[in-house]
Image (cartoon, one colour):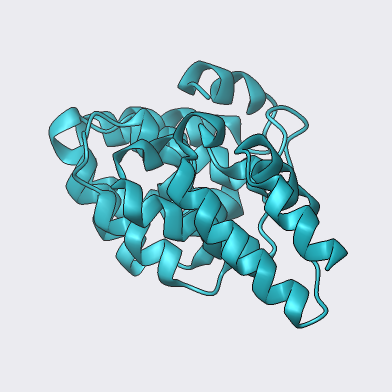
Length: 207
């Protein structure tokens, strides 16, 4: 995802003038984002965007506001907006993180989101910015997706990061569910197969 793609997707929002002015304002007056960020839903709308899929209008507008900030304000502003925001605002911050010049400064926000019971926040936390998560924390987050029904398709670079230890964790969960008469989500079973642990799961099913 890029800011240019989000800008193109937001052409024709109900109040385009407001959005354009808000983007210019936060670039020169970063403190204004505290008022403009929450207002984005009311001024731009809350409906889904056809492209990019999975995004809403207010989410895209809020991400653009964050990308318009001066670089030296990005990390602290993102953290403040996340800590004080509602669920929709938190999700927008999480989706903005990979587009901001902040390095790993906002990793604590990922840890917070993954601890919540809001599956939308968990999913948003596992986007491209999750490359900054340590492997152990990332594995636990993937396992939480399986527990809570978050599709593994939301996990960025799943194929590149999934390793033998994750396979062992998933296989243990599969065995526990089999013993309890419960099944694993199809995407988790497919991942186990790709990681070479599918034979153990098949054996457990046949036992």
